[in-house]
Image (cartoon, rainbow, N blue to C red; front, side):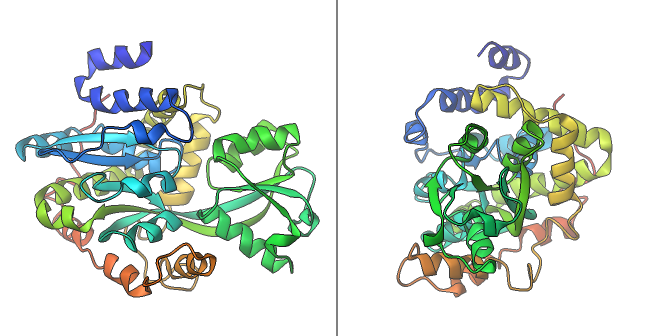
Length: 363
């Protein structure tokens, strides 16, 4: 915690963020987020972040160091608190209901959130590929009867199922092992599993650790920046200030190599604070992921009309419905409604008002 305390002396605004980061690193996997103080409080906005999900962490880490956002929120009488999570599914029980008002989620958790609580999708956080990684198999067909680690109900779960189907296999043809993404690389290395399916940076970490590890199947996945609908309606100015910070972060990282490098250093530092472990990937590697999965995606962060040939999140909705993970009354109309939020378009249409090209960040 020494590095956190040192940072607090230089930048007092980090108090809330570092407090939650340090707490999470010490808590047990099954209950760490239950210890968070995410109660409805006047003048407080609670935001769920994923320090180990790239490139989502680039956006959240940059927003948390945005001086203009802090000024705007102070003027509006609001304080922003960030709560770190290992994966998006961990946020679902805390999203809405006066708890988390803003969150960075993968595609499956986004669908699960919007069918359970009124939700708006602010914009795109990532479009890339989740990967099935193995050392012993060169094709997914070779995994028949083998042990595959996965995170249930996640984007990588869908990718794994699509990969198995493409090879004429079903779930019953392999041994599925439920596992946290952070444990997958070690499990593959030790031989506890023969493969895993995960999102970045887990595949990159595994392949950097052992050159024999390789991605044998990839499938499209997305991440999203979301907010509760009551929050955007009842606190519209606050929601717009946060949306502006989100857009500003993407524009700033795109503008110069040095900007992205600075953001990468924040991401790696935040990840170390959260996990209590030293960084595994280099600055150059995490920058590569951010470029490929967000900054070089045409039009991002605007929501595309179609992703991989279908409307956004419709394939994920169908998959979760097939698994029986959605409420009985859930419909794709809820997805359509969540995508109607126009805050991002309003910010982009008034760049001077929202100071999109005049950023100011902490060192």
